[in-house]
Length: 450
Image (cartoon, rainbow, N blue to C red; front, top):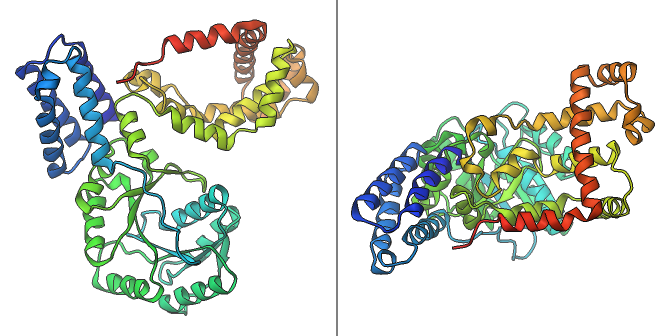
């Protein structure tokens, strides 16, 4: 998300950074570029106007004009205003109530409500240690209840069975009653969506809300629909006391207009971003981190948190000791690193969070293919234990067998072995004390703070 906006803003602001001093003409031109970038990102016009006015008012102040680094000062202002536009702070789910805490999910059909219910349930269970019960009141869409049941099973989430011949309000009250009896912490209720807003839909959701008195009423919006998502969120907010928004399909949204508009228009915070199809592809929405990504300053904190959550520490320590003792880095170790990278969302997701990658040429970013690591893992899985430990024995007939077993070509096996050789050489340097030199090099290239 924000790829196009990020590139445009970074290029514009870098011109200001290079300017010795700020003048009215170069400031006007920069703000015009920022305005166009926001509009092209499908940000609502009132939001763009308010944002530009705020930046202009602060950027033309005496402290900025007479600053030794006026360009840096303007970037700091833009960063601050982006954070305010996105919501200032991360708004967590409010679960500080007498159990069960009821969360009602609402939105249009196709926005991803059912999948999001399971994603939130899994996140609460795995990261916050909550017991969760999920239920569907969607008695209209074919196989809606079955879909939630299937997804809940795949994510190890408890599912409350319901039937199409039941009334939505009856289902909702029954699941809350069961959760109360069984001392469940959180109840997640999936509601029926429509292709458009209609009176019957709104009346049903209002009845559900009155029946279960949810602590959180979350609007689930498809971010790829841009301003349509914002308009729909406002319509729901007019008839329901929404407490927050979850934006889905952000991995397929290059513009990000909905994320930049929805808080300003509805006054409701974005709680989470759906970043993929899998049930663990959900991340808390941190305005400061998102602003940092947009301006090309990266989001290292999220990388660290993801690594802590997904990394097998014992395996990593074992590998570190192995390398420090000068023992060989083999294909088994290489596979473990590839799998770990996949668990963190892949190389493309990592690139999105590293400082400065927003200005990489499209041709370079286009070469990043997360499916490549999956292919490499498949090739290594087709090898014998001896071949993984001693890659040098992999020659003609072995390569053909490995390629056939992994559904790839011999050229792919050769490419893997070449990549492994390069990584192996790097690991040998690390084992000989190169880690300190490598860290010093990285430290010297870290971007400066404001």
